Length: 228
Image 1 (cartoon, helix red, strand yellow):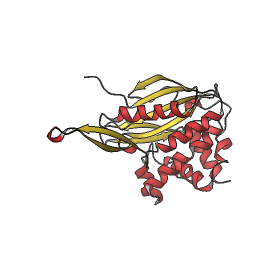
Image 2 (cartoon, rainbow, N blue to C red):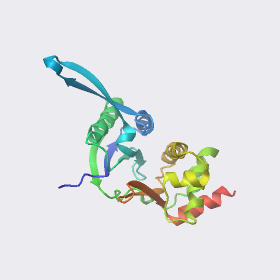
Image 3 (cartoon, rainbow, N blue to C red):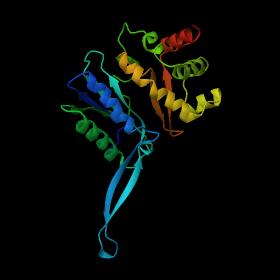
Image 4 (tube, rainbow, N blue to C red):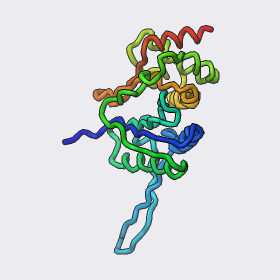
């Protein structure tokens, strides 16, 4: 039996750098905390055709959806879907709705599949950060609340190899959804500086959850910046 992928990445080619912001706006409509897809279903009870609307929350199918900047190509993005392994088969329909919304909203947008697998794609996470790009370049552009997330995560990783958002919540007394929101809203600043996600995720099959870690050099940079 073929294993369904956890990570699916699409290469998004745009006509202008301004279109990158348009992609962000589309993705905001499919936010994993509040976004949803409506599916029109036709049934025939007693032989009478009836149309029904089924609402599918995006967060029921995906742990994360984000557009990762390509450092070498300003008009290119890696649109990464991180599927919840236990999600039902409608996840494909949700993903295709996101892709269709991007194509319908942005003239000339080209979208091609570039990766799918149970492991993160080779360009995922810190690998795409330019060699000379300092964390400080985008960290300083974040608001105080967003900087707090990275400080909480970095301090936790001083004494632990990895974490879940639930771990950070217990350690910091910040609600899980607030932590997720802090992390998600950091992306606009990271994109603007052409960086990528400092967190690397992995599915924990035993406990049925995602765990996260980060490069220790990046962790130490966060800790240093938090004391300035």
